[in-house]
Structure formats: C-alpha cells, structure tokens
Image (spheres, rainbow, N blue to C red):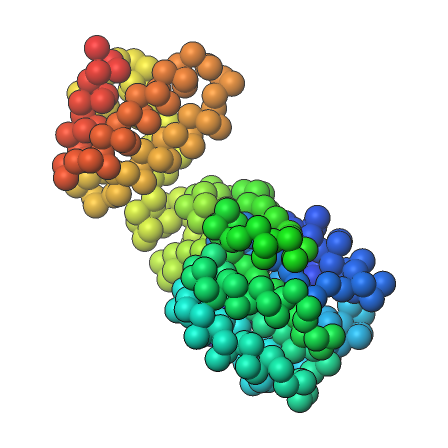
Length: 326
C-alpha cells in the first residue's frame, strides 16, 4: 500500500491545515444540524475527497467523533457499501450518466447505511444537461440522501447548484504544515530526512499533501531524504543553486549565470520548473532587496512567457539573462 493511502486521514483531527472547515463540520455533527448538500472547493491535494469520506462516515456513525466504528469506516473506504458512491465527473459528464448513476438509484432507500451519500469529484466537468438533472434532486432531496460535491474550479459550477450547497473553501497547506506531516510519516516509517529536503518536497508539491507524501516515498528509495537526493530523483533545483543564480546575476556575471542554466539543461532539469522556482525564491527574499527582486521577477516572468512559445527554452533564458545584465 502506498504511503498516501496508508496515512489518509481517518478522523477530522488528522486532517492537515483545514481547521476552519473541521471546526464547522464537527459543530454541525454534534448538534445534528447537517446539511443535505455540500460543495468543497480548492486546490488539488488539500483534502477535499478525504473530508467527504470522513463526513460520510460521521453522518452514518453517531459515535464517529468519539469512538468510530472501524468496520463501517473500512467498508466505506473499500467501496464495498452500495450506499456510499464516489463518482468522477470527468468520466461521467453527460445527463444520461447522472440519471443512471444517481437519480434512478437515489430513489431507493439505503440498505446498510442511515444516509445514502454521493460524492461527485471534479463536479465542474458535468455538462449543462447533467447539472440540470442533478439540480432537480438536490432541490428537494429525500431525508436519507446527501450530496458532497468537490471541485478545483468553482467558477465553472452553476450558481443554481452553489445556492443549494453549503460551500467550504479548502486552502493551500503551508510549507510548515506539510513538512510537519512528512516528519511524522517519516518517523513512523523510519525514513531519515533533513529539513531542507522536506522543504524542497513541500514546494514541489505546490502545497498539496498527496503529492508531497508521494514524493517522500519515491525519494526514500535513495536512502536519506535530503536536498541532494530530492534534486537527483525529482529533478528539483536546490535552494543553493537558486541562490547561486541570483548572486551571479547581481554580480553581472553573464558567462557564469548562463553556465548554471546550461548545466541544469544538461542534467535534464525542467527549465520551466526552474524558472518558476526562481520566482518563488524572489518572493521569499523580496523584502531583503525589493528593487532587485522586483526587477528580477519582471524579467523572469517575461522569460517564462517566451519559453512557452519556444521549442528551445534555453535560448529564451540566455536572451533574458543577457537583457537583464546588459
């Protein structure tokens, strides 16, 4: 079993970085004032589907917050209960899919659970006809029915759907939250790590827990999860390399600056990713020299734009560096 599945949250308290949502859901469950329709939105890997599963377990287990029914939880996780259904809207976009998978089956009362729960992931992918069909049953759902919608693009979800849901915004995890969680997992799995290695993974994962745990597992094959091994296995540029680029540019050293990028290209690094890492570095150090980093950010943004339109990204970088230095 992959580490991400092994360490998937099994309680609301084990969810990372979404306390503003957890507190509300726990209060609703404790008071018995749970809604029929929820919509979770936010970046990928921030816990939307995990939270949906936890909520499905909680509404079907009155002791979930204090002493959860582990057998019931396992059956929901394994997909062995017909009353709990997860649907990927990306592959069920049409109105016929919604009618067959949800509307027709939703008419039947649950056979095992108290509530029949439908989780529709990437719900923004549904067609207009599918949304209209879904809306009809969401307007006046039976007492035993619950919908939990999840999306990364809430602006594509019709207002008619949004107005019938309680909407929760899942935030990006902080670097500190991800590093802390990775440390806990590494301790359990007896994986040696360093802080700089874990920080590199957290940034590469773009604040998403799922990808961060996946990267931790991959790099651990090399032994210690440190900056060198993360850079080697995942092609990530180290903080020292980024700092070196900045120092050479500050010193107006055209040849040395270009050589770093040529070496990175030779090693197989993704130059677009390197450019984005540099922008992140500029942001983190902006207050140290606002004028410098503002100037560097402007030229780096221009370079990224040119790289997207070019089949030879290295020449775009060389030209941009030359323009800034000269």
